[in-house]
Length: 239
Image (cartoon, rainbow, N blue to C red):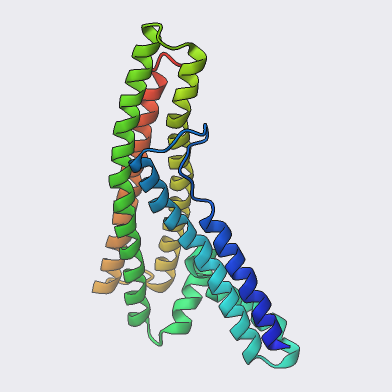
């Protein structure tokens, strides 16, 4: 019975993972091909967003199965639910993330070291997203300039200009959704750090806070890039 449950859970996990992977696209919302930088941005940010979703999903599944397998028959459902919450990690919230670290590591020093490594990895991934975003924003500003010139010269109609501008608006919307997910993740890390490190003044606590501060700085940098593009879009001749 347990093996059948495991097989069903594994199948559902793989299906969900494939569904998330299938979300990647090479065209914008208007059906036009994405530039190499636009494709790279979506690959990098999609990987980040899928890491949240898949990490929570896979952790939940494995935690749930193990929790059910190790529990007494009458308590399997309860243990499966607990295992799911712990296995979900930061994607499922700060509480589950802290519980996961406390379950895996025997002392606070090891827990903090693991969390520091997690946030540092996030910062490395975010740095790549920012570098690519800078390229996309530069491309979009040039695109807006060209659209405005062509519209002023009568080479394209307003409807055609709006159609061409759809790719810029699509990139702005994509950055908005990415920033929303990043802020949720940063808030979870901050809450988890407050739980694990408290007001500690150890070298580990300082290092962890430094990594979270760096994450906040990079999120602000990404927001600034998004705002710069939106400002240029606002003054365009295209409404």
